[in-house]
Length: 102
Image (cartoon, rainbow, N blue to C red; front, side, top):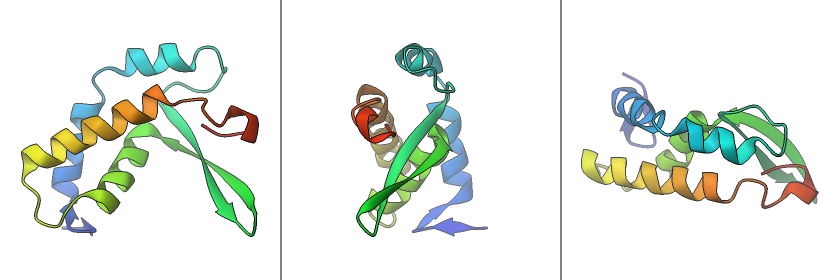
């Protein structure tokens, strides 16, 4: 079983499945940008400039969750944190539009 910073792929799969609910809100939020629904563009700062990487939102949430969750967190805590990450992400889409990413 693969682990991402203490989270098993099985736990991540459950969380990603739960996060798929509500994609309509994400699609509506992205409609004005012409970007693909369900995707998020992140800016990775390298040598003073941003490299833009496009990821499915579920992958982005799983990666942030792996970095932010405490080791051995209870499943309910992981679910709650995943919902908070996704909500923050969807709410702030386009915040860095002038920089070419979300």
